[in-house]
Each structure stands twice: as structure tokens, then as C-alpha cells.
Length: 126
Length: 146
Image (cartoon, rainbow over all chains, first blue to last red; front, side):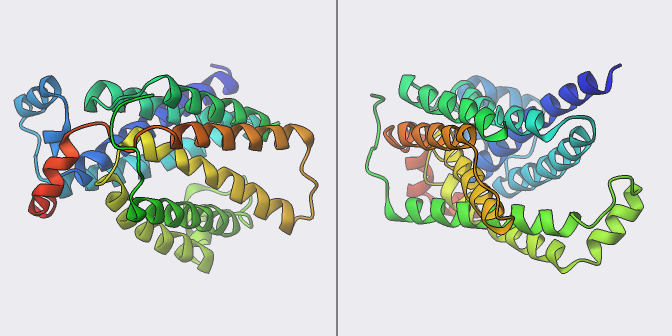
């Protein structure tokens, strides 16, 4: 595999892990999986994953540590001017997870804001 | 405009300001901690060099403080509302590194800065929370300590 392609794949994995890290912290901060939409709460219940809020915060921190490793590795393979704006895709990931799993209202204005930030990150990295 | 609470409480605003300041400290301290390490250093060598650098501990301390602050912020507001505000630390880090390296900021960077500010402005116009779950937690704060 070409280093650039591998770098992009690792970076996308880092973005996904970071988005989930934020979701886990949010679940922990909100008192546990009760904040999830019902069908995902049921899914969590089926796997008998802990409902203690503190455990979700710990899970978020572990995910963050993993994300730092992935991002650092991707920086070995990619130019910062590529890695930095792609890293800002986690704003998109967080908006999607917040909408789909937590039922937050992510309307046109919020998406517009996320879009501006991602495009802005591209220009900052140029 | 989305429905929900629009007036940002003071503690959420303060938490966001603290988050951006700590994020800036983490990134600058992290950069200073690893900047002296050769790119070709082994993982063990990199870890050893980082552990010997006081900036590494400054970054870790700020990271722990950030965790406590961020959990507090998240307990009071939408994740999709507060998380985009952290993009402001891109700008503070850019400003600090441009200042300390005496670099000029290019026109494209200025455009990027303007777009990020515009994006954060759009987000700030949306309600800070749109779900009922927060109200449940705030009514039963003991659930946070379980």
C-alpha cells in the first residue's frame, strides 16, 4: 500500500475514534447511556455494557489515547497540510453521532457552521 | 432556526473559554515537548525523551484539567453545540506560533481564520441544548456520581 493511502486510512480511523471518544465523554457527562436514543440504549443493554457514568468517561479517555497514537502515526505518512484539515472532519463525525445516537437537533445552521469550520481548516493548512 | 434553549448559561460560556485556553496550552506544550525529538527516534526513545521533558508534564496536567472541565461543559449542553467551539483553539495556536516564530500569516490562512470564526458564529446562533435528557440529569445530579 502506498504510504499516502495508508496515512489517509489511519487518519480516517483516528477521526472516527475521536468522534466516538467525544460521544463516550458526553454519555459519561450526562449520567450514563440513558441519554442515548431508545434503540441504541437497548443495544447497549443487550451487550450488558456498564451503565455507570464514570466508566464511560474512562472509555472516552482510552479512546482519546488511542486517537493520539493513530494521529501521530498518520503524521509520519502524511504532510501536515493534508492531515490537519482532514482531522477537522471529526466536527462532521461528532455532528453525525450527536444527531443519530443522541437525537440532538443538528439543523441547517449547525451544519453550515460545521461546513465553514472544515473548509476554514483547509485554508489554514495551505 | 432549531428549537430549544438559546440563552447560553454563564457556566457553559466560562467552560468553553477555559476549554479553549487549556486546549491551546496542551497543543503548545505538546509541541515543545516533542519538538526536540528526532523524527527517526524509536518508540522507546521518543517516550524516554518525552518523559524527561517538563513540557510533557505541563501538557498532561492541562489534559487532566481539560477532562474535568469538558465533562462539566458536556453535562449542560449538546455535544454538537459545544464541540465545534474547540476549533477556536486552531486560531489561538496559529496566532501564538506565528507570533513566536515572527511569521507573517498568509492571505489563505486569514481566509481560513475568517471561515472558522464564521462557522463558530453560526453554531453559536443555534440552541445550546435540544434534548430533554439534560433536564433529567440536572434534576437528578446524583446520577452523575454513580
